[in-house]
Length: 173
Image (cartoon, rainbow, N blue to C red; front, side, top):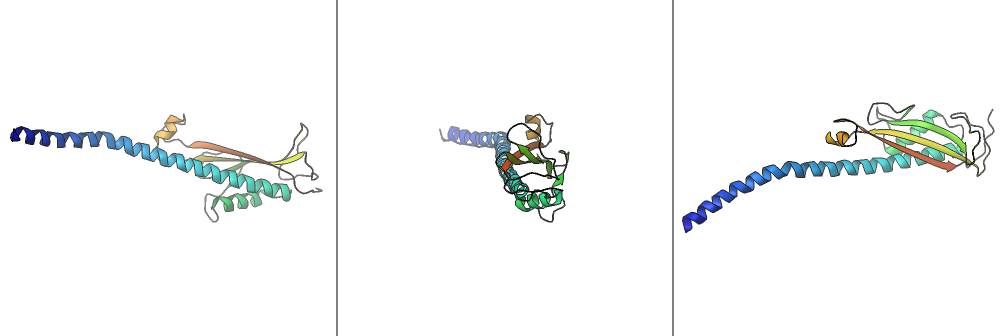
């Protein structure tokens, strides 16, 4: 009886080791996916805050330049002095850079909008200042890009848009 009990214990130790070896990669993958999900969430919050601050800058300083927008966005996202600062223009392929893809004022009702970077509009409730930011998020797990249709190891595009009423009048030249 005791010999049979010893053999069963010895066999079960090997079984536990095999089960652990099989399930551990799945647990690590789920942990990394959870970390990526958290990173996407916090990055989107940072982008929303940066777009809000840039929109407020445009609504109060109508002739704000691209450099001022970039400074506001970089400061809000904690990227001051980094080489991957915000840039103006369409979404590029470089990850970890915020692209300022669209700024300017627009009317609440359909009508001609002000031109970006050189606005001329009065302060009233019919005008909104709009900022759109695009960002390429690079996940830790390369499989995430495949799951989202961006290829194995591909980055995920995140787009944020914010609108705010024009708060101050400006008489452009």
